Image 1 (spheres, rainbow, N blue to C red):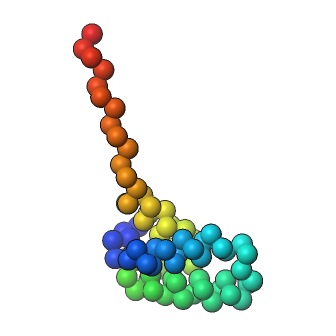
Image 2 (cartoon, rainbow, N blue to C red; image 1 turned 30 degrees about the vertical axis):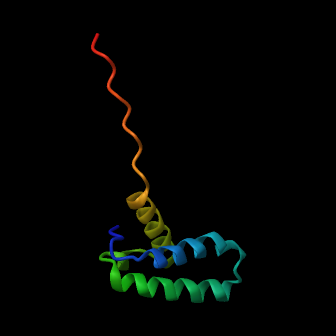
Length: 80
């Protein structure tokens, strides 16, 4: 999923929600997920295809993958 339209602040909100998901009462969780996904669905192409919580998980994973520092490439082995 293309997360280039998400701001760092929006990603932080998504990450915070996902980290606290299990500790939230159902009504608060539903309200927060609805608010967060409404913003995302306006900004992210294809976001309508996923359910709310699945969308937040996909957005978080996509954002992390995009901004994760790339792993150093090990040097090639010496010629034999």
